[in-house]
Image 1 (cartoon, rainbow, N blue to C red):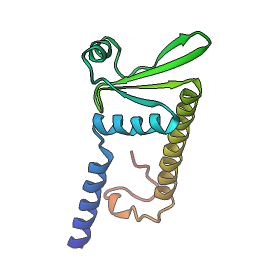
Image 2: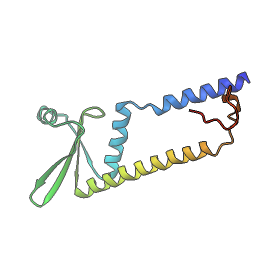
Image 3: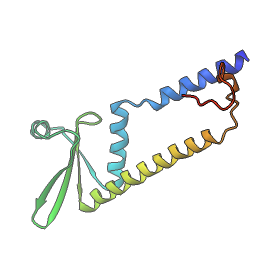
Image 4: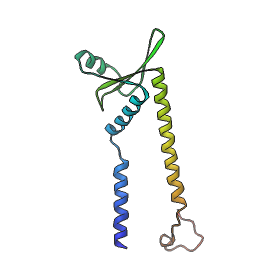
Length: 137
């Protein structure tokens, strides 16, 4: 019984550690989605670019219209100190990728809930002091 308890404890601890992501890791995954959607990576590597970069609101899409073209700019000070620049199609691709990712995350969470409720748990050890038919709160 003792080895099982240690195994379950280690499993729960490892899941808790992997579930916690830092802001840098979250930004990196967002950066990957941006690049995969068609945004171009532009580093803030000159004094002029750095001055302009500091004036922009971090982690917010900015929309700029140039003639008949729409340009989207996304400044990222945490992961790369750079700008991601893309057109309307890249922005649409990014929004679709974010939607698909959130849908997949929701489906995974639902699958976890279903598998947990279909397990044949023996709740009798938890029912100390209660007779059959009592609700547990």
